[in-house]
Length: 383
Ligand SMILES: *Cc1c(COP(=O)(O)O)cnc(C)c1O
Image (tube, rainbow, N blue to C red):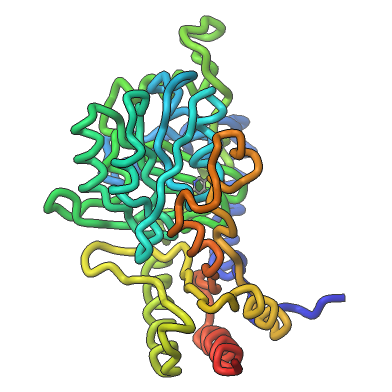
């Protein structure tokens, strides 16, 4: 028997339970409608998302991973092509490239933001490079101005992986913009742990290019139009009506939840400032001077090789944490045939050994945050 966590890493019931009746009613309506895949709930969701992201089109699909895959399929990326991706990201950012027979090329990160480094991207460009995927990691936008400039100069496509960053804002070419409207396409995930989470899998692609959106809709349904006449080879990437219904309800609460995440992040900073812990023990995540970080994760760096021991200690105290991500993708076994080696991307390699994500989710209580910070402080002070 394990005792219940004192501070859970994530507790989805705290945001979900107050909406339980409204959601149950909407789900029952889907049951009674007899239309379970795509349909009016999903179309409504697409409209809301496109407007929210500042794009003209949104194509909902079955997951963030399939969104990335379809974005690359729409560009006809395949064998012989290279796509530059950050090494420090979730697996799906790179696996979509490999699934199409193209080659992911891994770039290093900016240590302050954990996002892909434009200079590293520039250094990895070849005449086979077809696209760059910029991930807005942990809820903070990548340096889109610099990346867009690189992509334009080479005539290649810039795609956003906004799976962790719905509602995040940044200054793009002198204007404040939301993620989802800066790249040629942007991919979202509505996996339950994301800032806008379905009750199952879900994803979407936003774009301002109507003909690309049309192509994405074709790809989502096996390239079929009209029925059983296949123009191109697509996949089954459809979103179901139950997820559409849940997402429509939750969308109305997204800005409130985002504000709650920002408040929690500010409180962590305040609490850590009071401890007086030194920078050589722990580094807090950077807060951008402009734009809006939406804090899908609050990831600190634990120095002096003590991250894993701290994590174990916290767990013994009932404080759950996670490691996003323990290895750069260039070090993963499945990508070893690409020739990546330890030493290739030093910043990613260094930070993946230090990073530790602390609990942050709407409904996390102030006393729980105090508990987290108190235990971290106790451990780090005890050298
Ligand atoms: C979650 C995530 C994905 C994949 O989304 P799924 O909906 O889980 O398939 C892709 N990229 C990033 C950065 C993610 O965090």
